[in-house]
Amino acid sequence: MLLIILVVALLVILLRLLAPFEVYWDQSIQLESAHRLARGLGLTTTYDLSITSSGDDSKITSSDLNVAPEAQYVTWFPPAFSLLIGGLLALGLPAVIALKLTYSLVTLAGWTGWGLIAASMLTKPIRLFTKLIPFQYAIAAILPIFFTPDWKGTDIYLWAGTPWIVLLLGQTLTSANLRYVVGAGLISGLLYSFRYASVFLALSAFLILAIAHLPRLKPLVVQFACFLGGSLVFILPVSIYNRVVQAGAGLPSYISSHGFADFSSTIERIGHQLPTASILFGLPVSEIVTALPPQTPWRYLYGVAVLLILAFLPFWVKRLERGHSKDFGILLGLTCLPISLVLFLVVCMFTHPYGFLETERYYVGVNLCFILAFYRLSSLPEANWSVRWITSIFVTVLLVHYGLYRLSDLWNGKQTQLIQQVAGYTPTSDVSYPSNQFYSSYVSQALRSTVKKLQQEYPDAIFFTVAHPYYIYDGSTGVRFMQGDRFWPKAYVTRPTKVFWVTTYYCTEICGTVTYKNIDVISKLPQLKTVFVDPENKGKILTAELPAGFTFNSYSTNSQEPAK
Image 1 (spheres, rainbow, N blue to C red):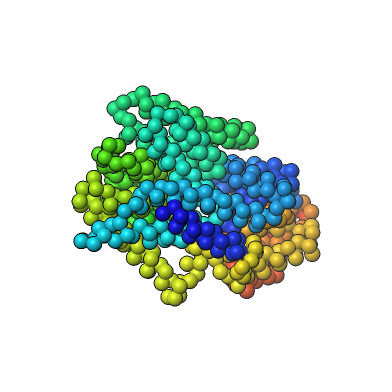
Image 2: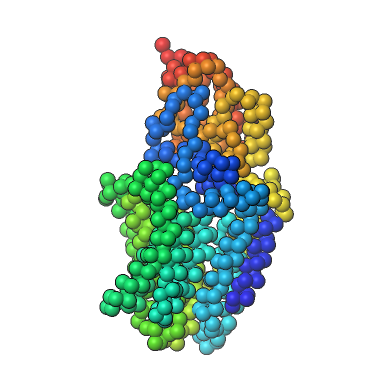
């Protein structure tokens, strides 16, 4: 199994190495930070994360457009990714090469870990009615094709480290040697420095050790303490960095008590978003979740049913006991990870208004757990016949979906989706395959190149970009974060200034980067004119000549004439 998985995984990696590299929003901000770090400007960004965390433009230090905003230290994201890429940039590697190199190695490490787990889980054929069918080989070949995470951020780091934690904790349950649990803790802490969401692994480790050891407390306490000790080797430096640069408690900058302020509303949001957790079963359920009407009993019942299944499985595996299955530790780990993640996301819902539970990328790190666990249960002699029957049907449906239905995308007009998932990029008229192009499918090359041309033509002009991260991922400078509608009525200039505003496709007019609300005090300027319209309808560039002393609040939102 391991050999099949690694061979197919290497083919997927090769496809992505030859493909143009597409960047995404969060990744773009971290890449700008890496470029600034390589230039000696510290782990900073020009993207205004303080506004993102509060939605309040009042945090901007100056309303004078002629005063350049200060770059901010990055605490919204962990530092490791920017440090890693920044180090490679400092060594002279081009950004796209540095990214392809690191993502290739992480992908290979991840599939090696998942392949070792698969070698234990995909060992026997499945019995369907009276036939034994060796589905394990097809599963092993399909997994790297459809379950290799995108190279669009740091989710893949969590995905790549998770199997090694499962393997080490599995060894801990069969060995008295504490080095395995310390190793699992070290990996968990390292992952935290790349992805804050990795903190759920501590809950997973506790649940695995508790189910395995209780009612015996001593091994649980000793092993979990060793796990935490290993984790803190990396977590403490990140927390100290956050504490120093933001004068906070050492937590990510977006953590707050938001959800507790309106407890009932947060509970309602949790109930509404919980059905998305069914993605953990390995099948695409977006259509099912979307079809469930919001705020209806059926949606909430579906979510509760998913939660109960996730919670029940680890305790059912416990009934197998170590003596009945040599795979007990790995199987227990695979079933504990999903429920731990969901419980962690539920807690996160109380810290920020963001929809953690409904965001599918949070489930990437554990998206293989149930597929591998269910296959093992379908062929496990100790399992009840009904469990083997249900899991066998699940595996069959999985194979039909990915082996037949998804592969049919090659000829049914859905090639773009298949290319995005396997080759890792969105085909557009701007890019070619194979190539080392560095691009975003959300902002056309024509729009980006026109901005650069205007910057050269008007070096003293100010450029505000709505899709700001997609203009800075390659280290480009001279563009600013587009503040929202609360800022602009207070904005002014102290000297004659030419200002450009670069819009994006998801706003009908000029809008804020975070709020997406159209800004009337700009759109009603009589001197505003359009200088470029993107041929792909992904945005336009507008400009205005502002005299010294100009204030935006001199124009009312109801008239194009100056307010008297």
